[in-house]
Length: 305
Image (cartoon, rainbow, N blue to C red; front, side):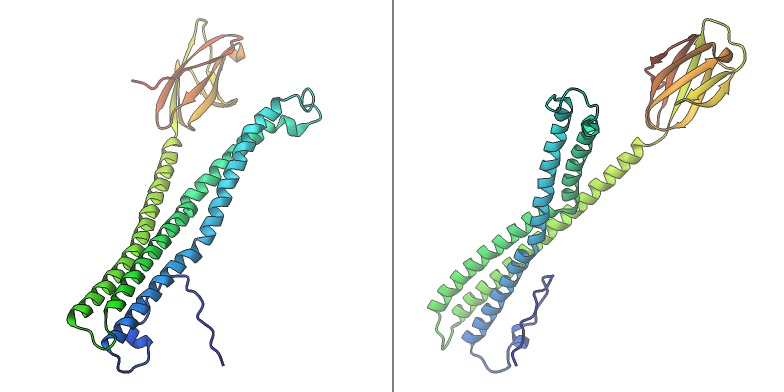
């Protein structure tokens, strides 16, 4: 009954020693060194094959994500051009897909960027390159060792080895073992460094997003050449939020961004308004002039100095 070879491991695992892996028995120095060399070669081949196997999915996903990034980017760039073309007739009446082409352009550009970000944070392209680099380095080291070991076998005698020949063999085997271990360790350290860098970038992005979303405050100065009777009504984005009898009002905990501020007084006969920009974590100022039938203006609020 034949035995099946073990399935390839998902990890590079340590193997048992040569003495435990081979049948016990007396061996000459030459045979012992030969067995040790064969074992080291096998371990190097296993490591190289591990990288060959595990590069398949990173390579596929890297190519897929970069293809999607290019595709979405091209389509997103073409969408506004399609919306403005006359190839489908004048106007967008009866063609809702044409009228929404600009919006789809933004969505496609965002998907292109998301594909690149996804690839970067999950490291598909970088893993593929690391695995290929490690596999080729292991292959070169193995070929160099096989050549050096072949030269040693030509010079050595299979019957007896002197001290210099044994020392030369042990030096070759030790150097090869250390080189293979260093190559695997270099790839692993590169992965750790990349992983830490990605975590730091992600944390920095989260912190920046939190900083950008910090609520701000707005001090509104109310001015009018005409007398104001009774409290003035303060509207924020068309919602009444405050009534005041003073010449200024403070609005707190506002979301950063643009807001429409409207002031109405004297039963609505006096009014004024402005679109103001609230900065994250800052207190801005805006002055609004009330006039009879006043129109909205663009205010440029400034943070108090």
